[in-house]
Figure 1: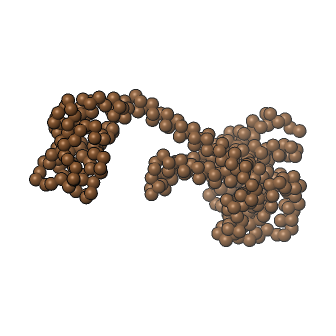
Figure 2: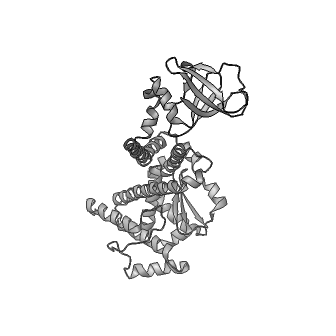
Figure 3: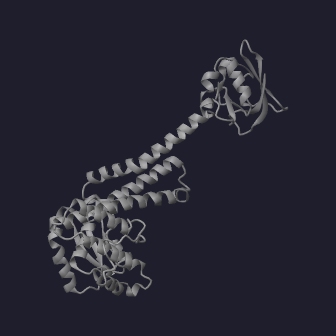
Length: 371
């Protein structure tokens, strides 16, 4: 039996074409001979015993290495010949196991399905559960360290509020009892301009209302509905959990792909999709919290639906300058109604659609009769 390959002496980077020959199959004598006139750079005899060889297991059709224990290697692409060699010496079962597994199509398909199921379960269930557990175990000061602070946003996004001092004080008086009720969350009400109608809760406890939002709402009840929604984000530590989840998803994808250099290119889209999914889940959780608080404080939950539709229309109006005026007109003519079944475009892809929120409110009202 003769196997064609290349000889590496383990001392230089040279690769010399050579043959591995079986001299005596009964005694297991092996010889390495050159296929050219070059000398082998080794001090060891070229006649070996089979027991001196260390033959790598087969992995598909990748080149096979046969080492001699002193750094010398014989590398060949003739895997079938090496398989015959190992089979003759009674080691084929052990050394070809990986090769057989690799070529077992049903087992490969099963492995793919199991791998996908494990990754899916980890990302959809394992990571959110872990992030939630960790978030509620961390000390309170962690939220301020991990989340964006108001001072940073003031330098990059926000501008000083143009609301009158009396208007700001009126809203502070309106929300004061509820800020006190949830003082364990360290909530603080702030007003800013520089952003369109919006309200957001920062991990450090600040609840920011923009001037456009305050000017957009029709009454105190609508403002409180959104205020309770932001309190819900603080109560459930959504921003901290989101930061933890995003980090975990990134680590899982790097672990699976094993490619850090092209991480942004390969993982940007799936990470974004998962992030949007998590965000919508958090929004729904905050919605439920807001509805519960409205109901508990004897405020109609219809105000939440109305203000969501108001914001929806604000962001989808062709003429943004006239959005508020047109909205007030629609309210007066009852064009905005909780019983409407029309679909609405999402204000943000990270938020549930307004029609979905309306359905949530309808379901809530079925289980919570008017008090």
